[in-house]
Amino acid sequence: MSLLEVSDLRTYFYTEGGIVQAVDGVDFSVNAGETLGIVGESGAGKSVTVRSLLGLIDPPGTVVDGTITFDGQDLHSLTESELRREIRGSEISFVFQDPMSALNPVYTVGSQIAEVVEHHTDRTATEAWDRAVELLDDVGIPDAAVRADQYPHEFSGGMRQRVLIAMALSCNPKLIIADEPTTALDVTIQAQILDLFEEIQDRYNTGLIYVTHDLGVVREVCDRVAVMYLGEVVERGRYEDLFNDPKHPYTQMLMRSVVTPDRPVSSLDPIEGAMPSAVDPPSGCRFRTRCPVAIDDCSTIEPPDYAVTSDHAAACLLYDDDFAGDPPVLHERTTGGGRDE
Ligand SMILES: Nc1ncnc2c1ncn2[C@@H]1O[C@H](COP(=O)(O)OP(=O)(O)OP(=O)(O)O)[C@@H](O)[C@H]1O
Ligand code: SF4
Ligand SMILES: [Mg+2]
Image 1 (tube, rainbow, N blue to C red):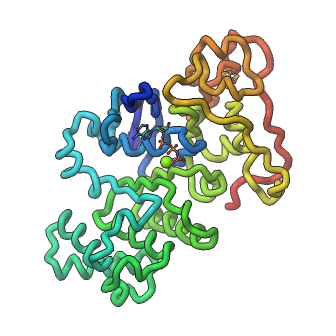
Image 2 (tube, rainbow, N blue to C red):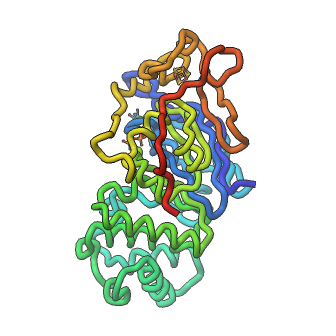
């Protein structure tokens, strides 16, 4: 069984401007030790999806439907205090994009990590402090014993992100959810943080959900990928399959826009047009307003998932046997471009 299984997740925001259908029927799963990438344009619903898993949606938003099974337990049925006590920060931890907002500027980083350790284990204050230093060392902070006694502002952006990762690790979580953790960092530091995530997974067999709009990052760290568009997962499967043989027209367009050694920046093919509003999304297939291969039925029929293989599915009507015609081929691949192993 998967570590996490999410099915038919729906999260809406009831605003004065209408009901924002931010996440509208999302399915995915994550196995222990595996990394699932959640990708898609800004506003696709990536953050709302992962925040929904842990009940971190504030009014006017609410999870209106779905089952979230984590380690055999239904998270959706837990109360806020049960989630806080039993799951958040212990079984599942978060690493956010902006470490400054997650760290308290008036306490040393060591004391902040030690506090989490103390809260979730039966270690004494001294033991918790020692564990904090050990964790800082684990995430590659030099002179960890000295650095533990310093304040967040004394750390660079990349080092602060390492501190957050140390904090996320402090309770040996089974799953880490990282929402754009490297977006604010420069490319070299970003690569180091990605390496660190891989190391952590190897060492602790932690599951990881990695949210990003950067397919280059996905290529570095993810085993499996869920591609989101306007509140829905339009394609999911193993990274290699999505990269080498994307099925959904949106994924095909996204993959064409990835920079690879054989495809320099000048050949980037950005996706034209803007994603429509999640308040009144297009009928039928939500991607149809930007889809170059849409057919008439796309405006009336919501495409279900079509299985390509047992672990690869795409939600596009052109894969339905009832719709005659060739499957959409937008993605002409030349040699190379796969993940560097
Ligand atoms: N508090 C809120 N109130 C109303 N709508 C919201 C709220 N938070 C998010 N939304 C809407 O939900 C949708 C999904 O937002 P979300 O933040 O999940 O996107 P995202 O994929 O994480 O984008 P980004 O890449 O920019 O982080 C968007 O239409 C957004 O405007
Ligand atoms: S269902 Fe239609 S509009 Fe949607 S991606 Fe497929 S072809 Fe394009
Ligand atoms: Mg986001």
